[in-house]
Length: 216
Ligand code: URA
Image (cartoon, rainbow, N blue to C red; front, side, top):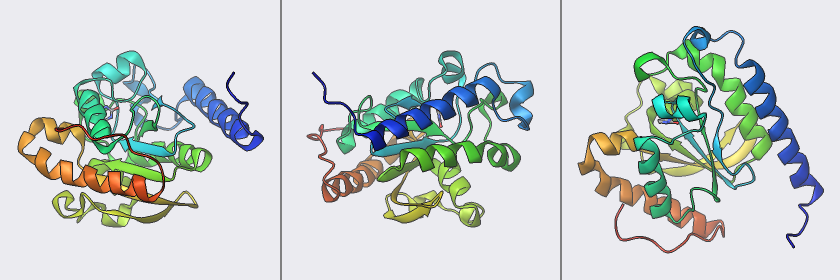
């Protein structure tokens, strides 16, 4: 028999569930994407996990299924997570800056991100992740708007640092977006080094990474 969750964990699960259900009922009331979206996409994975992965916005497959990162980029993300020593179904919760698909998968506008960000911050507040993987420049730039304009992912990707986000003290790891690694496979060697940094961080926090596959 599985042991019962302690009350504090139970409370977190209930709060997360309430947030998700209420968001899926209404969406962001003021978002310009209200007019074009077919489905809201809240998350994928385990809300009790210690690690939160943050991407950009749902694409076509995500909009169809209502789950984050289930298309080609999602398969690549799962490989990245596995390479870092994580089980994508059990060890992480996955969310996006935007919960609606932008038309033609274009980059989210500042207004769209601004309208959607409070929900992501609430997800962080409730789940209190020990490590957050920021996948690509939208995730990093929207959580650190001061950096957004001058941000060079080639310089910042791979770093693991202390952070306070949504009043929560945590660690962040800045990563290339999986779609970028599909677009330019030559960047995968560099990405493997970044994922090794994540693996080291998991070990440092006693989060027990699994054995490493040979290739990404
Ligand atoms: N799918 C997602 O859910 N997020 C991304 O950033 C890309 C694809």
